[in-house]
Amino acid sequence: MLVGAFACAHTPQLLIRPPTEDRDLVLRVHAAFARVKQRIEALAPDVIAIVAGDHVEAFFLDGVPALAVYAGAECAGTFGSYRYRFPIHEPLARAVVEQGIARGFDLLYTQSAALDYAFYVPLHFTMPEPSVPILPLHVNVYLPPQPLPGRCHAWGTALGEILRARPERVVLMASGGLSHFPGTDRYASPDFDYDRRVLARLEAGRGGELAAVTGEDLDRAGNIELRTWITLLGAVGAVPAQVYCYEPSWHHGNAVVEWPL
Amino acid sequence: MSDEPHYTFPPAAAYRLNRCLHMIKSDSAFCVRFLADPAGAMDELGLGAEEQAALVPIDRDALVGRGAHPYLVFMADLRLRMAREPGTLEHF
Image (cartoon, rainbow over all chains, first blue to last red):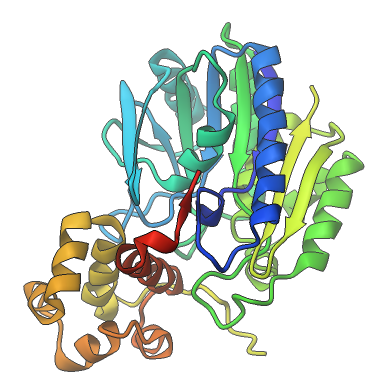
């Protein structure tokens, strides 16, 4: 069953802060993460299913899946001095792969791929105590051509149906966004107005409208990672969101959101 | 402001260049070799003189112009700065 839904920023400067970052802003995002952790502990999940976009870490140009499921016994990765490892909820992973493919989604699955920091950063701050296994779900956001937003939403809808029919208590989390343009000449000019319009739609329970945006819209707004949120929205439906924080830095719109189910 | 997408299909001709950026970003042993001996590390990957000239200073415009993925340029640069200036970073 699906017991909770959250979306979290994962910018690495929240984990490793260089002097260029406003420390108070970083701490305010951490405070929102702490609220998420507290909520997850109250929801007492058996597993956290986390939708994130691999940052060309596990999936380089040797193989670029649109959608992938981590289906091994565990997964691990590194970022700077951080070394992390998580058990995977293998029965749920296998069910998602098998039922996802049965529903027409040609999923790649992996039992060995590295786990990107996009998965790790939110889990570093929000993993409940005691910890629970995870189910990492990858959506390609950085290597064009990416899956269409509408396809991500459809996958999320199927995923939600699969999760609701399962006996485990599942918290679904999307990791990513909001507006940022890493590596481009717009790095210092995110589209914060676009972010605010997205958040207003989510608060109104109109997140499903995001299924209709185009990949070009997302690229223009620095929101290619919104595909992970759109995937979650397919699972969540028209539930109004509660915005825990929106903290625009000089290069990134940091948002933390819950959909109370 | 250009109407071109910020992130585009990575051209096959830039595969080795993107490979090098990916290894700086994701392969800590290679990153150490690159820091100690950039030319030697880049020779391992068969990169030409112009690619090497753009990689050593992480010249974003030159690298992206040659087909490098902007995110890989960004994160390779960040990882090199993290390795060179670890004392300036606050870990949470």
